[in-house]
Image (cartoon, rainbow, N blue to C red; front, side):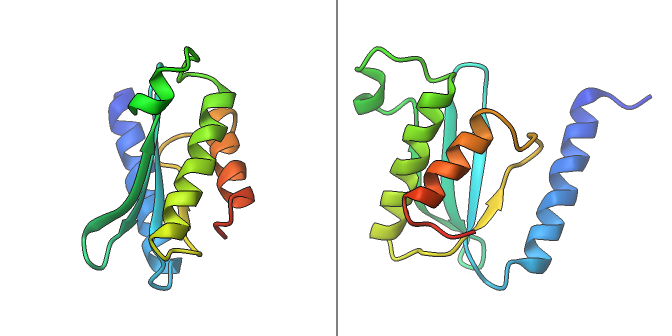
Length: 120
């Protein structure tokens, strides 16, 4: 029987392969979710560099006393990554949810990024 980590890694690789095939050269909006925080990055895979990033670990977001492990924090990060992506000249991305289900915090981040001006 395969381990949970092995299954997650296979799911992540399968999704990333599909994204590369269908991306059409657009940057990738990658999401990482832990039990206490959420991180988002806009990555240009062609150049191999990060164009914009946002996290609940940033000083401005840590100081307001809210938890980084809720839907409200995820939507703040979604709006912030959209703002920083637009400032970097990115308007269209491919959403990389990793091995996470499109539900809860991941969905809130994606919807807030769409409202902020990113299209995917």
